[in-house]
Length: 390
Image (cartoon, rainbow, N blue to C red):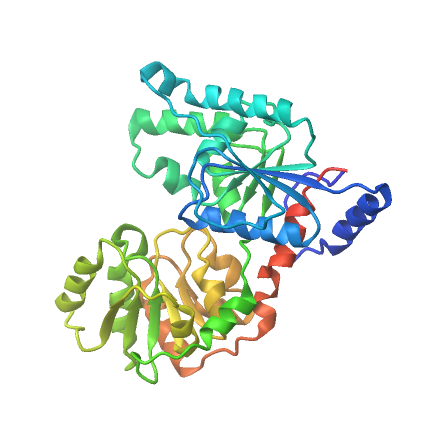
């Protein structure tokens, strides 16, 4: 058995995984893995599930994906079995019982399927609710991709907040949990008084070769030197007021380019005008290939109030470009360590954020390939496969 507890991305899982491979090869068996997910449409979690499935198929694992809807946008390897089990709740009673009835549908398929799975991963909230009511409840790993405090409690107050906390605790207490950052797991445990059977933090994978190939594409709408923001124009989460004020206070002469789309673009434009930064801050809008911009920037800036796991940071590092971030929950503190630690500023310390921006321009750190090695898909797949008991 793998001892219960918490292991980090720097831990050596190769010997554990090699031992499992030897055991399976000696038995003549193939590992069978089941993914259960709400949908395979837009969003970060479906992309992570897709990449994990691709990596596991490449590793010789037999993968089955159960999608609890008809929504599939991403293409999977032909050897991966895809099963769609949608349930449409019609009427008030059916909606109130939707998780239990969907779980019954899943259980019937499992019986008909007739094979056991060596590992089960449930992704996204509806899948968690369904799996927790199914025969997979005790054996599944519940994979969380977003900050639970913000996601579950962000708009709750008083009695509603107390009730939501109880519901979340009932769902995850004593379960096997994977979170995409270590801080996220700690917040789940602390804010909801949850003690998982086992809790593991595994960072999301990166296709580093693809990122670096795209990073070499030509870009014709940027100056020679600039700072960069990449992400949604989400005023509540991304805190453009903090970004613009710290940039202005830093005193750097380089322009700041904002790459990304969203409903908040007009408000961000107004914030730029209010600060009289029209000639220094460029609102470029969305770009199909942000990596080409990351590779040419002097540094990328992150000013969010919260993140699940800010993939934009390791993506930028994979392009060889430094990053500066505030220490928001969760993720930046797990990435900006060692020689990158000076470029992590306390969340509400505007002066420290501005100083870090100035520092990265004056004395940028050297970003080597070792900084993103642990994000390679094969490494992350090994982490997930190492969750198997036995």
